[in-house]
Image 1 (spheres, rainbow, N blue to C red):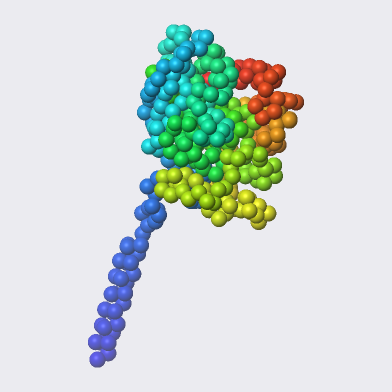
Image 2 (cartoon, one colour):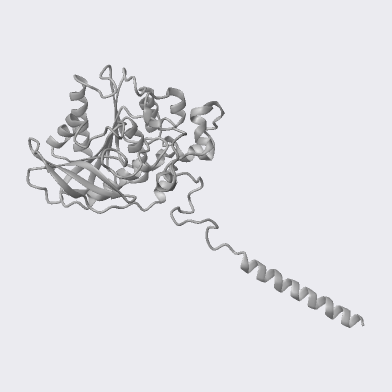
Length: 352
């Protein structure tokens, strides 16, 4: 009887050991337990404006399509051209030097405009002198109309709380890299106002942007947004507008982000969420030089935004130039405009 009892106990122990072994085999984790179709396992914060999330995307675009020829400039041709970004047809003003193409192609600049009411935006209007100055100096210039602006397809969203325009800009980069008139390794970006935020975010996401120039840019840490505020309607939350599907997927609309408008004193900027979306917290990804211009009397975007960014660039030993103008306002108008443009061209010629 005792032998039978011992045998029974041994059999139970064997079954238990086998069960534990099988259970261990079944729970071995061979990969992420979350859906990582568009995100790498490095992405910790689920936000469409998280830097690591954007770095995990595979953004690409075919070469620009020339849709319409325009009157030539002094030494360059002008076209209305388009490319596709997240399924949206994005239009833009494309200038190409008339001189003989260099063996590897011309250096190029993706020109990112500041906030203009999307319904009033026109491809050939606004920033005419800026584009002309760059084009006359031998660059291919592609002034893109962000989605929802002018005739571009898609939903206009602004830049501070959406990655849509950043994706448009990087798609333009990918498109120009395939254009036979452009040297794919010599492409930079220019951005004004809201596009300062967009440009720096794009440079953190893509190391293929070889240089960036920001005029009167804003919102790099979100803490600076609370500190300086902004006289720019591109960021205003409109709760009566219901966005769904593709129109919403690039927007950050969480309760946490809403605090920046409703109750900023309750924000913990050291939390994982705010660190993930902050450009300055992710400045380690910046690999190309940046040039910054800002006027002291800018009534739209406080120059403090630029000064705070410069402090971060300096602390992190990044390559930068910073020019402060005593006057000129938000657009850095004459007589400072000419000086700022000369510096911009010199910088691009040196870095591209």
